[in-house]
Length: 402
Figure (cartoon, rainbow, N blue to C red):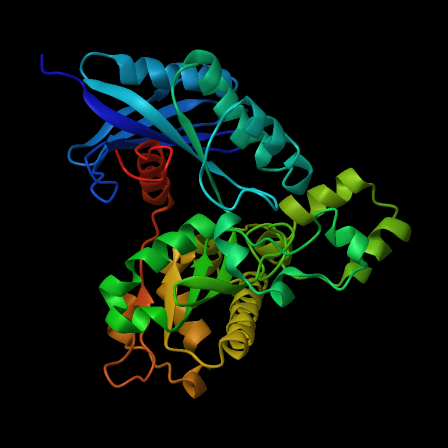
């Protein structure tokens, strides 16, 4: 058998899942072919292990005896260690939702930095415990394996101060209450490939709409974040599958004071019962809503479209104009009806779609004579994490490559 191929393991841990991808480590961080990807889902109910090979398709799809991230990690490592895979994990990269005020670059993890990250759990209680659980599980099983954290908030540290502040007394700003923004790894990937699509215009005024189960938009200029719709938490901005998006704070006070909701009940309401699910009454999945002719489903779609359009208008005002609009993520990449509805009233910006191109999910869906190009670009957060992991671990102490 040939020597094992050095690989980088990329992990994205959720409350009941462990998503992963395996990239071959090459000389350049920009040449990282993906070998496998998959997920261990249903850790809270019926765990299942699924693996796909990029060249040959499905490799595994079976039930799994795993009830937490520790057991899921052990199963994944056992599968990767089998001789038929013929790979050797040399490093791991993690998606970590929150980097707080201090972590604005990818970070090689150690005990001290991990302790600091635990302090950010209150800022993202639905995500951080699971992100850190995967790191700790891997640490226990492979204590000498280098691990790198890549932060969803880091990309937005380029926003001007007026975008980062809330109009609250300064003492709260000093406690870390500010706009952080999220989906940063997705926006960073899109910014990195924009020159391939837009050429010199990639450095212009671009709005990226990351529309999926979680949804947000970001205004880019010079490939950097100037403004984004999510704020202190991923609850803010446009409506999402189960989150309401922007909400008058007075509504929360009313629910606490007049409806006697506890903090836990309010958390459940805002994170799991609102958004498209709350509006429709039966589903937060855009695919199901589009296939349903009930008025409640149509109203939920219209609400999502309206508030996405409204967000685009506000971001255009920040940028002072628009040179390109990009759709990405699940809805953005695969829902032509939603894209068409969003763009329907944006002719004043120079946006006009080609119906056939849009319906086929083409790369460029704008008409040939439209002033502003509209693109559909598949995002790849895992690749960005792999690139950062490779780059960080190949640097010497002076910041130079070995």
